[in-house]
Amino acid sequence: MVSLALVRHAKSDWGDPEIADHDRPLNARGLRDAPAMAARVTATGWRPDVIVASTALRARTTAEAFGAALGVAVDLDDDLYGAPADALLERAARTGAAAVMVVAHDPGMTVLASRLSGQAIAHMPTCAVATFTWDADWDVATAVDPASFTFQAPRA
Image (cartoon, rainbow, N blue to C red; front, side, top):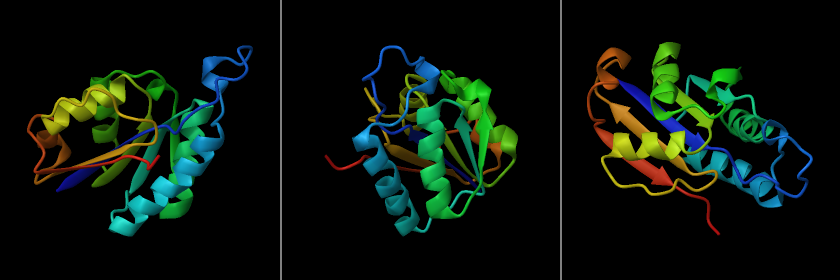
């Protein structure tokens, strides 16, 4: 059995147009939502074996909040910055871990969550968490529908 949590990075700050996209920090809402959502995931009892995250500051900061709450180190990956859905799933499978959390960006996160859930998810909000479980290993999981799906979004 394997499970995957997709976490879209928390809300970022667009206040300074001089800051490169990769270096945008979280804004006040993002700094509030990341630890709050991490606590909600922790309360479910689900815990990843590994957290992989984009190197972008907003994704890295979000992942670090989840890592701190869950007691899991964060593995940063340059290839997750702006990665498409297939690359996100492939990266999760490549860890070989039974439970993986991926923290990255849209549109890849929404596309993958929509595809795996079989639901038309038009937009995965910032700091939303979609969790999928398969009664299989990663070799099979990437080719079959998950056995379960949950979705959590921050409260306004």
